[in-house]
Structures are given as C-alpha cells and as structure tokens.
Image 1 (cartoon, one colour):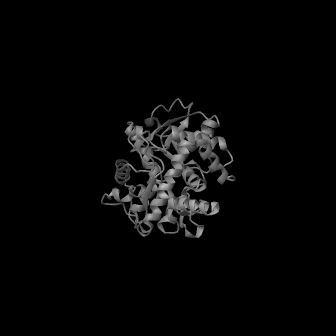
Image 2 (tube, helix red, strand yellow):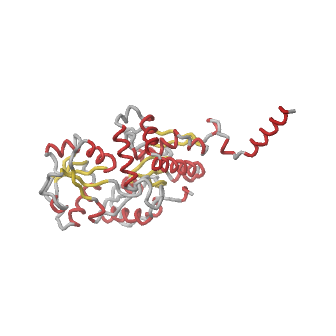
Image 3 (cartoon, one colour):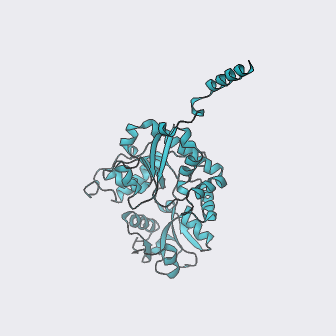
Length: 336
C-alpha cells in the first residue's frame, strides 16, 4: 500500500510541474545558429553564459555559436547561412541600405564603446582640432574618415589628416611614432592598454558632435524572423538572461567565457577587467535596468549621420538620394 501511495504522490507531483521543468530531448529542441564577429570576447559573453548555464536549453533551443571566419557575420546572416550574428550598428545600417537582408534584433551595448586615443604625453594634442595635419592609423574606411573629420570640424578644425593602414597593432604604431592617433574599443583594447601600463588620453565621439550608438548588436534576417518568430523570440530572451547574468555575476560569467574558449582567452584578468568596464559604464545594461532594447532615437540619429555624410549607398554603389526609414532597420518586438 505504501508503494502505491508513493507512486500516486509522485505522479500527482509530476503532473503539477510546468512543462518547462521537463527538458526537451536534443532532437526536439529548435536549432538556432549565431555567428561571431571576431574572436571570443566580452561582447559575446551573454551567448556563452546562456548556452552553458542552460538558458537556451530551458527555452527549447539548441544553439550553435559559430566561430569567427573570413566571411563576416553580417554576410552569413544576410545570406541565411546563420540565423543570427554579432554585428556593428554601422555595418548593419550600411549593408541594409545596400540591400542586405539584415534586421537588428538585440542591442548588446547600450552606448558607444569606441573612442579616439593618443599617447598621454602628447602635449601638442589638447583638443580635436589639434589633430589637423597629423597621422591616423586605422583601416581607411569611409566611416572612419567621416567620423574623425567631423570630430575635428566640430571643434573648429579643418578635418584634414593623413591616414595609414595599420599592418601592426595600434599601440605599437603609437609607441613608435608611426601614427599620432587611432581609434579603439575602450571596453577591450582600452582596458588592455591600462593593464599593460600604457598611458593614454582620449576623445569621446559623442562629446564632439557624433551621435551615440549601440556599437555592438545581434542581427538577424527578415526571412528568419518571419519564418521562425517563436524561436527568434526564445533565443533573444534567453540571450538577454545570459547578459543580465553576466552583469549580476561577473566572476562566474568570466569563468564560463574563459572555460568555453581556452585557446583564445588565456588572460582571465583582461576578460574580468573588460567585463567590469562594461558593467561600470552601463554598456550591457543601463542604469535604469534596460538591456537588449534599442533606443529608436539613437538608431535614427546614427542613421541620419551616415546618410548626411554620404556613406550610405545602394546596391549599385551609388549614394542614397532618399533618406531611409531607419525604424525598419531594427526591432524590439521579440524581447517581450
């Protein structure tokens, strides 16, 4: 009798459990792929946390994090090879304007992580207009030139500078005097420079007329979002859990990211310091507790900036004559 009662009690308890408490078998979970834009770093931490803490599994997903390759994440997504990808907002806007099937679906960073940097002992550089006539080390893209030129002109300069395409690290080029200034991602390169004892000073883009932006984001394609909206929503909400966990539990999140990428991430101190910079600067989650969501005004402002700078081109390489509707370039609808 006791055995019968125990089994009945067990069946009753199991029946009361929510469906999500019973994990789906691997073959029953929806497969989703996400492509990285670079070697693993703290911009990606929410993905690895969500995977390795089981958040994706709990959402009924089997998520494959695709490593960085010579083919950009944006190209993989736009050609429907990957369902999602880590993208930059500038890249998404320029490629979408040229006809690529891209939609921004999750704002990884809530504010700009880049800055213009130079050696701290450069007494001749006190403000952006002092950069006129100096040498910039970068990649020579239209975005870089427009950005730097507008920063200098906003401060009353001409916006004239030389550009050298870097074949070595920016810090080596700065240290050797091969270049006078460069651009860096503060939350990774800037943190590493500080840990390495490299004294720098910097100009923030937004202080000199450049609209703030969601520097890093997760993009998808309209084709995937239309075909599998439930899977897309489940992925994005579980991903947000991953990024929020990283903010609330930075030590464990750091260990998860490093453990998942032992060959690429050999400096735990850098990873942990980078994550702290993202947390302290309210990059991954705003002071008001917002994570993942796009600010429509920011998206429109940076889109307008690119359009007015003549950077946006159509599929034939011609400058856009009509300002796009940038509200169609992103969505917050799948975050719940």
